[in-house]
Amino acid sequence: MSLTKEGYKKRIIDKQIEDNLKIFGAISIEGPKWCGKTWTSLNHANSVVYLNNVDNNFNERNLAKMNVDLILDKEYPELIDEWQEVPAIWDGIRFKCDEDKIKGKYILTGSATPVQKDIHHSGAGRICRMKMYTMSLYESGDSTGEVSLQDLFNNQVTNKMTGKVDLKHLIYLIIRGGWPESIGMSENDALKITTSYIDDVLSFDISNIDGVKRDIHKMRMILRSLARNESTIVTDTTIIHDVYSENEIASKNTVLDYLDVLEKLHLLEEQNAFSVNLRSSSRVGKLTKRHFTDPSLVCSILDLDTSKLLNDVNFLGFLFESLVERDLRIYIESVGGNLFHFRDNTTGLEIDSIVELRNGDYGAIEIKLGTDKIEEAAKNLLRFNEIVQKKPKFLCIICGLHEAIIKRDDGIYVIPITALKN
Image (tube, rainbow, N blue to C red; front, side, top):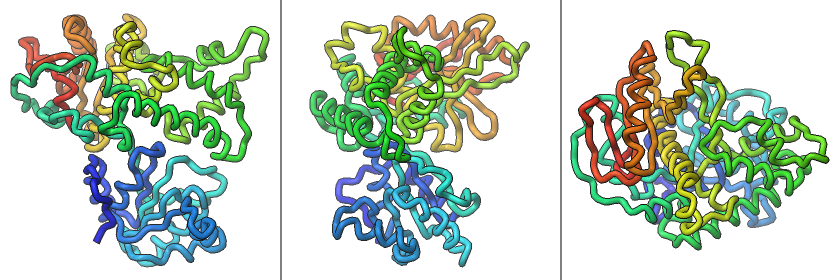
């Protein structure tokens, strides 16, 4: 019998967890804190060890520090929550998996990547690493799921009306984010959740992760620089210029260290450039787009609410792109694929998102908040289709305010984000 919590909302990753527990001795679910890792893991576990439990003065953590075998003795699958508090657990579980080859013995969860020097074996073949994110719109119940990525790849999309989408509601979904605790909350209460989240990161996590004292002010400046450049290709040089005054000595190594910490806390995601056979492959841009793991963090860092975003529709467009690409990442990774972006350095042509399956099939997607930009997006997609040798399986525009699922005469799909799923 699993330890599923009452009121648990099924997540897309549940199916992947079920599959991997049949293949590997253990799985490690990694992702930002508060994204739902523990509740999802309990949905598959028969026993649990909480290393950050304050009961009996962190007794279970202290036992693990003395000898990891003292906590690896419960019914399988056994969940070890926040295992990175005692990195030796990784090697202990890897050894346990070698003992008898039983599958599905352990589930590890972690909201931070531990210092690698404390781990002596990769766990390859024994422990499967899985990435978990905040909730997509489909998981939170804000998308009907009338179209899936698989439907697009298989050209099985039927034209239909989906209904009017309210701009203020889309903004609310951006501000609220996909944090399970925020689902159903008001905008104001959801903002308090993410503000508390950022405060905890700054006051505790950025130094506790490896014991290195870091400047809270500098980190806040880096967060603001990343937030104002959300959904764009921003270089490290740009961040340095944002953080350091003219009278300060700019340290690229310091900025890179702080960015590395944010990645280890699973607060940043990189959207790599797509490599595709072009007539001149040297033209393809290689820079990554950085995203916060959830667009709500941008709103909290920059103190944005609905009224402010309505007064800056251009920036709202970037945040909508961030929302869509969060969901696309969840959807495509659930079927074994990856999310990319595309830029042609010669012509400047950019495509917001490329979703690629493991077999190499891919689709090209433009993201537009309003319907007034659909023709511009279609022009970009058709131009992209002309210059690539290996053609995409589909061309698609994901729109915020579109009221229907359609396939245009030029073959391009137009789909509301509130109708998409994996």
